[in-house]
Image 1 (cartoon, rainbow, N blue to C red):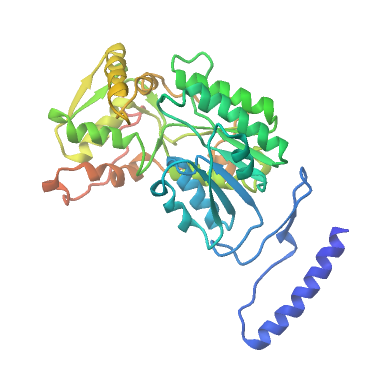
Image 2 (image 1 turned 135 degrees about the vertical axis):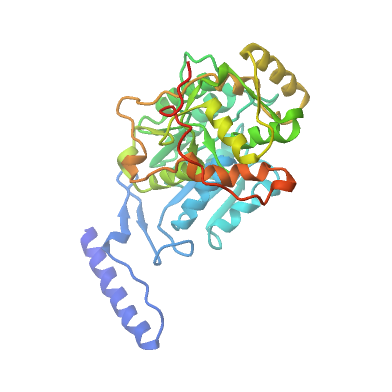
Amino acid sequence: MWSKIVFFLDRAMLKSRITLSALGAPLQRRGVHDVIVRGKTGKVHVSLGQGGRSSSNGHTATVFGATGFLGRYLVNNLGKMGTTVITPYRGTDDERRHLKVMGDLGQIIQLRFDLRREDQIVENLRHSDVVYNLIGRNYETKNFSFERVHVEGARQIARLARENGVAKFIHVSALNASVDSPSRFLRAKALGEQAVLEEFPDATIVRPASLYGHEDKFWNRMGWFARWTPGSFIPVVNGGKTVMRPVYVGDVAMALAKMLRDDAAVGKVVELYGPREYHYRSLVDMFQSIVLREKNIAYLPLPIAKLIASVWERILVTPVVSADEFQRLAISDKIGHPGALTFKDFDLSPHTIEETVTRFAAVYRPGELFDAPLEPVKNRYTTSHIKLD
């Protein structure tokens, strides 16, 4: 049946191409592979154009958490592929306007929603064949606890996606998520994974390591302390011995975008982490060598650091660092979940920190040294180079 339909489509297109060619108009290249039938829903997707933002790949994706750090990079990658992207938002126009230009006219659809309103969630996902859940909080607020966002919210979105015939559900968790974790954030993330799989059994669970990029809370947090504390002290817990594999946010967004078409990750766990391993103290040393400020580290006992951060959480609307973030800075990254996919399974090679750190750290140089030459960062900070007792 489908072969006959494709045959007649090709004949009609061939005639239109001959006519357009005679008129001197540019030709649109299409082939049989542009017609896709999604097995789970039976929906037919037909791509139009030669690729890029001004084309259509036939897919519609909803990205919950699109206005967040990772979300903006994912929307941009989906837009470049010609995907129609629905970007639910709940904040002000300033938090969403940058997403509008990531696709052609009508390609980025922005709808207001509230995580507590099921009808608004359904309105955002009922036309989509792929749903991404990137919603998360680094600290709790009076309206949203970790459990409400990462567990109940994730379960609700997964259930509504299944009930509305969504073909693919991709849930972003965290690399060290565990129900036994001392971090409430990581415990909630692990419970959220379980909730999603109960509602959507063949969902993809993505576990990224600590993300860094222009808008991150990794280098920028170090930069805040380097710029505003007397002596440029940067606080470090656990003696700086925590082992980390930070990953560039653009690499994670690229992998997530590839999952739109690649079904290899359906029902699987995907671990996305950086190619090199570092002690947290080595990362602070690397940062301080670039910003050209005083190299001072404040080694804090974890209970004291959490106490100070808990006071900030009560005083500041957006705390520089939360008590639970200090707790996470004392937890080493664990990789190697049985059967987990990695960047390699998506033909991606993630950036190293040495390749990217200067573009994020150099902005925290003092004004008089801002234009000082940038020396290439050598590979001498990893755990294979520096041994900590």
